[in-house]
Length: 109
Image 1 (cartoon, rainbow, N blue to C red):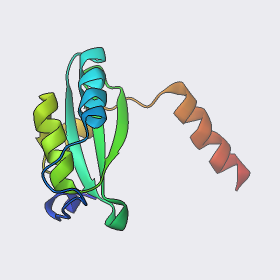
Image 2: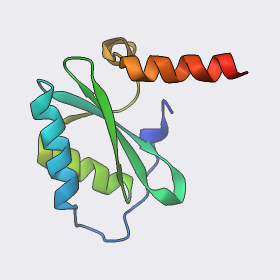
Image 3: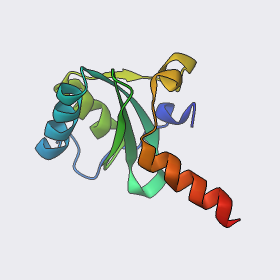
Image 4: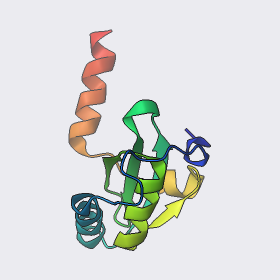
C-alpha cells in the first residue's frame, strides 16, 4: 500500500498509546541497529506497522489506528516513512524461512 499511510483511522482509545507496542518497537530498533517504519491502514483492524531494521531484518506490529501507530513510533524514536520507497524496499532482506515458505507455496500450485 504505497499511499495507505495517508489514510487515517483514529484508535478506539484516543490519545493512549499501548506501552507494550512502544516497548516492542524500541526493542526491534535496538536489536537491529535502528529502524524505519511504514504504517499501513488495514481497515477495521487498525494499522500495520512494518519495521525495517538497518541490518535488513523486518517485522510488523499492529495498532488500533494509524494515529496510535504514529504516536508509538514517535515515542520509540523510530522514523516513519510516508510510503514504500525503493531504497527502503531494497534494504529489506527476507529470512531463509520466508524464502522456503514462498518456495513451498509456488511448488504447491
